[in-house]
Length: 284
Image (cartoon, rainbow, N blue to C red; front, side, top):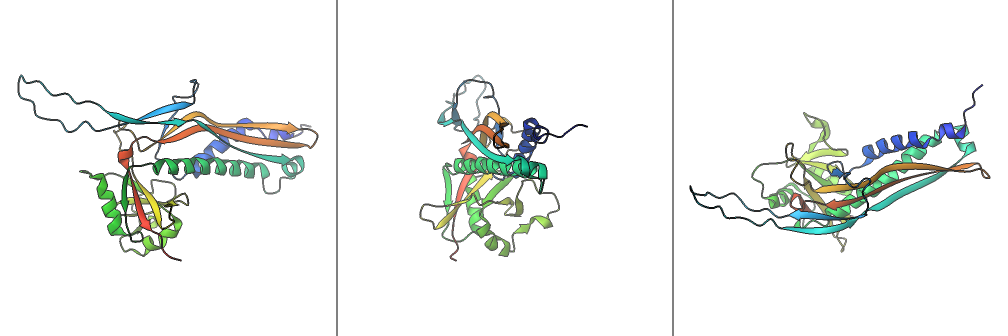
């Protein structure tokens, strides 16, 4: 009779696939970010991220005339690959008893921990944006419109705005807020709860207060348009190595340590696609 062993139940290859899938489902801030895996297998852990300035509109040039040239300029920032890691230890008693599916719970908890870290880094990257709008009111439709107008768009584009759960009361009370359950179409982003001013609203506790603790800083991000692949997205995740799971057996204590890591960094790759809207925190 074949016997099920701990190594059968705790299989790092199977767990890696499961944890990777769970991470993708749990991230809130980063679904719209571009994932750049060009660093996989390449030496080095530091990246220079360019941010190009617009060269200006085209100009009329007469027949036989020479067009003036424009200089392509860019600023840059340097980011370093980091390792996000989480580990749990399972006893044989817990695994074999199987109460509450401890291996599945370990997968979920590890995925949640790594996803939360990626989201935190993504929010930190967004907060380095240079376009901003400050309101002395709590979050509201008119100020959101003023913040969006900083983009100076000629054509409306898809956008997402991250708000803290404590700000949702003000939004839901607005007659102009459309709850996601009233959409004619489907939600686009994980965590999307509705729309206001044609902006998709996603709740996240990663939204931070300013240093004084008086205002929430709500990033508004222009999403990548179809057919616009050459235009840099607001955020880029530079992936050095995707989710890797390893196990280590301790025979004396009959326990198995399960650890997972992800080598990556997140950078603001197009500052023109992010406006940091600051709204007054509602007094408790």
